[in-house]
Length: 204
Image (spheres, rainbow, N blue to C red):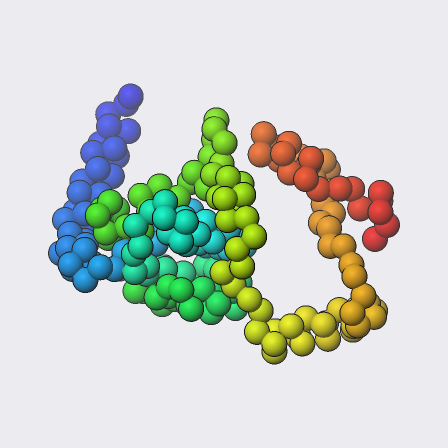
């Protein structure tokens, strides 16, 4: 390790300590009021925005985690789908102001003020089995946490009809990506290749 890299590491650690010190009063307030900060691994990915929240809420209802009053940090400029956040607002307090999210995010560093200390195990577990499948299996035939509003159902049916699908017709949605044409294929991409199909196989 060079002198410059050592200095850079010390500066990063000092900044982290300062951030924690500044966030401590807010974390104590959160703990006292019963609220907990919910930090997702990626708010800009629809799978994480939907799946991780679904998992933590179902864990509560299954009795696997204590019931908490969650505060979801979902800055409006970094969410994959703002409309789905409106649905989650039925179960969580949602903060979508980028400035407020920036100010509150350090509070989530404290375990006693976070909704879950480690969100990576639900979908992005590396070297071990992700927890989402087991949670969904345990949920079994219970009703889903979210249900589309009639207005959204009508909008969806209208959009499908505009694309040429008759009303009430069944359809299968799939994703097609020419991922093999990318210059670099990472291990993550290898899994994506298995999930995706080549467009020419089914027609465009």
